[in-house]
Length: 189
Image (cartoon, rainbow, N blue to C red; front, side, top):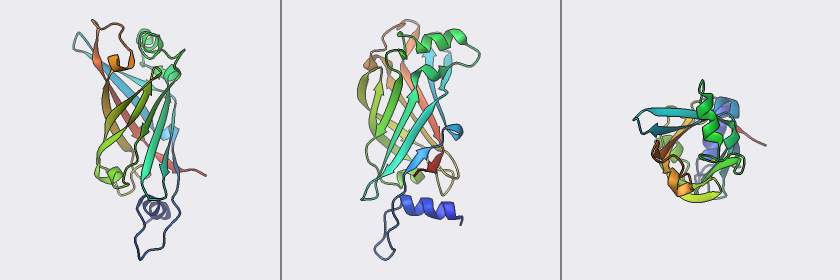
């Protein structure tokens, strides 16, 4: 077992009575190895997908061994590759309104570290266009023993855009916005 894997498992797992406790390790999202995407369905039933070019985040342990995830993406960093018109629309006040609301932030509730391995519901709050609402995203079961380190954490969820004041173009764009995050982690100091 690699030293990085041992440190990761020790940092994420709650201490057992017969094993000395290891100081919890704070992790940050490795931006170059991570991605954040979103998808909307047009009324023509075609889906279009955009991505955020800039994101950052942290995974913070607490004294009890639970974790909290915070991810922030830059709304003005949204792009639809090869579709400059869609990119301009997504940044405009009709959708993300990046000029007035430059950040989209997800902050989870505290959760047990096992969720990163087994997968399951991840509750938290999403700040979008200046509105904060509770949301539930889904963590996929890990494809490795050290999720985030040896394989990405895969998180998906969808929100109602009208719940966040995104009411423009209702006849052309469906209400549901799907988000997908693929996150790699690295220890932070």
